[in-house]
Length: 272
Image (cartoon, rainbow, N blue to C red; front, side, top):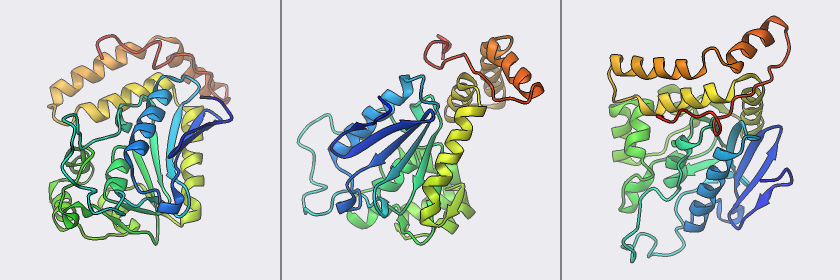
């Protein structure tokens, strides 16, 4: 993945300041989702995961929408699949498996799979004035992309049930109020805010520590307190006493930017 970017048919990837910007690029169709887009997005995530020059990822949409949902120009969009390998989660790997923070800069409308893919990210910043909905049940299908797992983790059962079972529209401000998003900003401010956050992560956080913490956040929800403590302890032992643990203290004491050396690819624990 070069500094000049890697262009695909439906997804564009550029890297700058150790931040990968992944752009859904069908603005003429409000970035409506296609199988090709899903494959390219998964490929982009996979490359970001193993590229040590990428410390954080921002996903956004070209034009005035994030992703307006499935391609609706044909009546057979939701016909039964002809191939047995069909999956309702067509982006592999999903964002939560990337060992870098993935921030969804939801710059405009996010409907259906456009919203469920944003829910696979770690952090969401959403544009005011845009339309948001898990609209699937109003189209004769049901929420996808692991959303029956990701969304209740974020906002709980009752709120998820209301949004999923009604398919109603909601606003960015409501999304923040219920915990679905971190911030609601004017559309023009969404991407700059996401990039600023990503660059702060890229400079000031230890890559392996972030990767391990993200792994714990996404892995431990069904676990009890003692099991979570055992995993946290094991993860601490994977970083304590090593160069980044020392560098974090030295850079703070010396009032300078840290120089991180541990890598999620090279130094990932074999048991994780």
